Length: 366
Image (cartoon, rainbow, N blue to C red; front, side, top):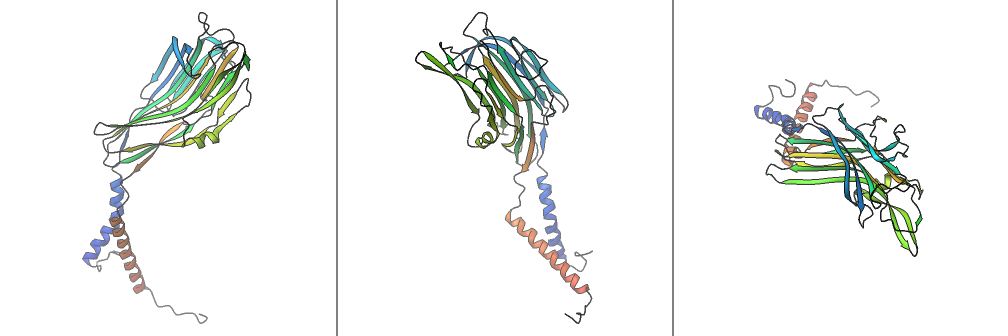
């Protein structure tokens, strides 16, 4: 019977068996953490509108919706997708992307393996509107993944998401350095990745959180006497103490004030989405978005995040990576029991080995 032989006293055998079983009981205890995955829904949406400016050069008020539609794929498997390519009502494609498309476009793609992307671009030689000289064209694209999770076990677990944020590019065409009249409308381009989540607790209360990472570029107009100076400005979307190192690592630009291109390189990061107690559910929405506006007059924009045409074979953009039982760490008393038990086992093994070992004579030179 090895270390637990019939010669071992009954009380000691029981103690040793209990000490050896403690780690197994602990593992079994942790195994009660059960996360059930709900079905994944994919959305690919596009939007075009005529908008009017506000005092903020990055915000606009919608005046006329030209087109708005979303294609949804529920219960999506890893090889299913939702995609939308929309050719805009006005404008040209000067982006250098998808050279077989000559018109301005809005495009989005969401694949069940968590890859995809969004892109918008437009260059308009005349006015964006044939009837309103103060209106600007706005194009948007959205790729969205939605999924829910439920803790149907008896353990509280921690959850987090690992994000592989694809490369981002935003830019403007033909920023005029000086003007004699204040246009009131400036060109803009922006793209961002956004993860939003809601935990619904068993008692009905909720906990919400979000993560943003993106970039916006826009014109600023500053009057100076009879002249109005235009210059390019930019803002990080989601810039805070936690994400600032990500921006510092990923950001670069081409340095061209007339045709600026600003970039965020692809990067990896993790987002904590909180603890799920037994009976809690977690709803997660991950979205890539791109948007741009132009009033025309030989001006335009470009905004891309990831690949909306599935040409680069990119891998998944995100993963539900961590399910950590938070109550499976043994109490100090449990650790003490395990250590003492292992000590008894080791002691018995040493004594049995010593009693069975033959006597060995030392060599003359030792």
